[in-house]
Image 1 (cartoon, rainbow, N blue to C red):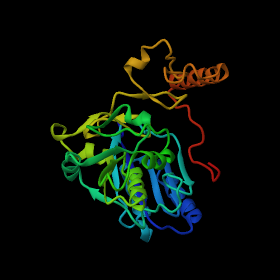
Image 2 (tube, rainbow, N blue to C red; image 1 turned 180 degrees about the vertical axis):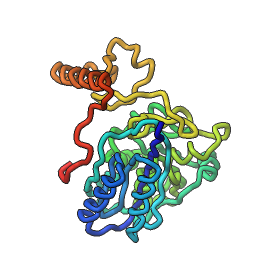
Image 3 (cartoon, one colour; image 1 turned 90 degrees about the vertical axis):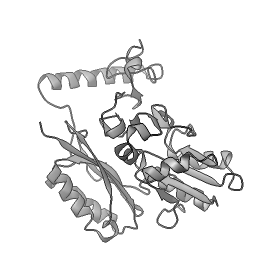
Length: 309
């Protein structure tokens, strides 16, 4: 069985002529049969891609040929099946949206911590530990003692900080996210607000779970990921969650026992809010997926996104 390399990457860097970059990158992706999503903006690049060892290496080498991305880092995991069905390279105002243009990690950012340094800092009693991810991500796993902001989107994070923290009282703040990008931007935001000691986990939860032995880990639960794996555990082993195709919420074995769970159609999180028309459309989609599986095919659309995607 062919093993697929899954590469998660991001870098805040000042980029120019991103429309031209988009065309060039999409061409290299097509040439190397790479799938996934990459976001490009003037502030940098962000995304997760999958492909063969040779294909991923070729694309990463190409990305690093751009001078601002020469030291681009990435994190790898492995999948027996490709976790993506299409390739999209999208142009965005921000590679992770906080909604405040003046917040720029290329100008100011918090202190990066390795997994070993992270354990020490978050165990200190005066550290305020904040999970910068959204509520459905926090629900399935987080660090011991972390504060859950209960945000639905990252855009809500600034208002949460302003209403809950004071730079005169909360001197030491540590933040984390899945791959490092949201907490890096969050740290830039808090530095702008005048918080003195601001730390973030370099490489995010994924790097921590990859490097930190489980017996020394302060992580509890699983980590939600934005691809067909849905969640991963220590050592980046495949987790136990699936994804509801209607509401995109992670669902576990208990959720599937609920009378409100209908495979491919609804789950306990969305069953009561979906219209009958949407349930019917989801049921038809699930039927087509099953028919495609019976034929030994994948039910997918266009593999490479157009300019408007």
